[in-house]
Image (cartoon, rainbow, N blue to C red; front, top):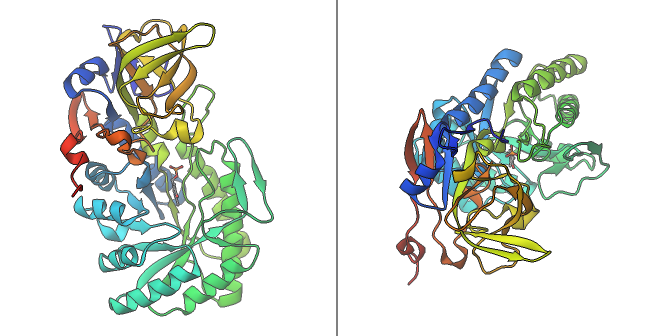
Amino acid sequence: MFVSDCLSVNEKGHLAIGGVDTVDLAKEYGTPCYVMDEDRIRKNCRAYVKSIEDNYGGNGLAIYASKAFNCKYMCKLINEEGMGLDVVSGGELYTAIQAGFPTEKVYFHGNNKTLDELKFAVENGVGRIVVDNIYELENLSRIAGECGKTASVLLRIKPGIDAHTHSFIMTGQIDSKFGFALETGEAMDGIKRAIAAENIDFRGVHCHIGSQIFEVTPFEKAAEVMIGFMAQIKAETGVECAELDLGGGFGIKYSFEDNPLEYSAYMAKVATVIKAECEKQGIKLPFIVIEPGRSIAGSAGITLYTVGAVKTIPDIRTYVSIDGGMGDNPRYILYQSTYELVCANKADKPRDFTITLAGRCCESGDLIQEDAPVQRVEPGDIMAVLSTGAYNYSMSSNYNRIPKPPVVMVSGGETKVVVKRETYDDVIRNDM
Ligand SMILES: *Cc1c(COP(=O)(O)O)cnc(C)c1O
């Protein structure tokens, strides 16, 4: 009925998440409000963990790309599910440390980690630093030496695969700000320097080919290219890569046209390719890392708003304004992302009304969806925007000095606030 299976319509005709009435949630916690189904998040985690056990003898680790949605509670949950954590900034790492996340299971990504961030990571025993470039490698080598430590690293490689939503193309030269290019020899040069560098323990290679990908073929192709490269590394340096990190990017359902893979099917297919290629190339099976972000948190979340003004411009469109917008969900203004809309208190009614859902910020582009079907809404209704669990809270801002909404987790019919609503005092906290 909806894009996400944690949603249903209850006996009052209201939208429910994890069995909890969203109209009651809006009353209790106010709007706007992010709500996430914790049980759904845990199920998603388990599917990935199990897929590595079932298809690859457990010789790997699923790490959650926490940029999708990070807070202390989420870090604790991910640790409880036996996953590792991917962080891309000192702030994400700090959150993980404060949540008691075991730092040896943290992978630190990013194309321009600052010197302070590298030091912070080394001092705190971060498990792997995924090195993006030579400048970073040199700095890391020096910083690790200064701290009297050895940094374990993977190198981020651009495998030359451009993964689009429904197809992929091999490109001669990929244009991306991330990582070392394979085809120019830059990657091999980086690997040789990493092997030779002091205070650096070279563990293997990483790639991440994109996001919101629905096909398994680009992932299979990436695995093939990376294993070919690992064989080349062995041939040229004598060093066997112990680890292969294949990144994330598994798509989720935002609209009914989206057809995501079963996450377990992904691993089944890719593991087959890995085994065949390693055998062919005569190298030992690497420890495999995968990095799902969106597919852990995205479909588990919704955002609840209260409808304010409804403006019909005859023969043009109807603008329905809500008490949130680009501050809590910048994805539409950034990428014209698709979302499903449901009027939470009229969820059993047909969606036979076409609206443009407008945010409250002072930007004409501050929209959440254009020309989208929804029930006949009026001021005071509760509007739910679905599949907002990933890249919404984590991308939110205080534009127009609007406090950020809270995050409420639903589990087994119980609810708890895991991120408090910001107050006006939070907004002026750093003002002098
Ligand atoms: C963003 C990112 C991910 C997660 O991507 P999703 O599309 O959310 O699964 C994983 N690895 C790296 C390096 C990333 O930058």
